[in-house]
Image 1 (cartoon, one colour):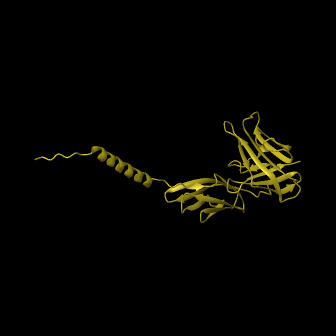
Image 2: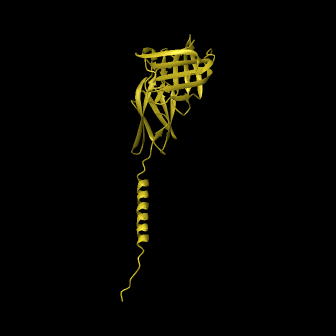
Image 3: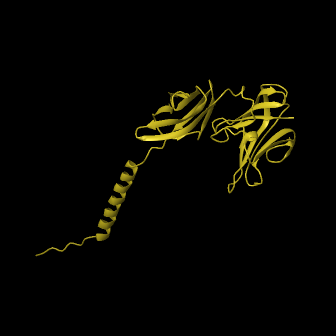
Length: 235
């Protein structure tokens, strides 16, 4: 006599689908790509000085700079120490296995010897407001970069002529009387056409040098971004 078996096709189909799903998930995990991440998008350093770049996303890596004559790169743990050798532009390359990430490097001359009005650390290139055609560079006392009244504050404004949708404003408060003075309320506001305003609050702001009414000021942002350095006239 032929035996007739009742087969639960629903259970078989469910088991089959589960096995496919399980295999698919394993394959997806195998194809995960390690991501090398740097805590900066650009590096600006002066001759003889060094900055630290933190690397995440991978356990081990190598770092190199080309051309080699502008800067050196030393690896310790998860950080890279980039030291400026001579003025110029190059590229930092970080490699882990078959994965690579690059970052532009700018080595500037001595920060204190160069007396030109300029902004370092805002863009890849150093901005010289007084030499840029089609731009205005102004300063005002008693206000910050947001336009709020502050009696001890100076705000510097850099913007294309006739363009209200784009500007770079940087402000700080202090007495501005002594080199090494720790200033207060270091603030940068950046507006680019079609983009929301960006406000950057400095962790520390230092008046590095005074020559007449010209100031050399560093706005330090810790690990959040590259420092911004300003050389400009006060009052």
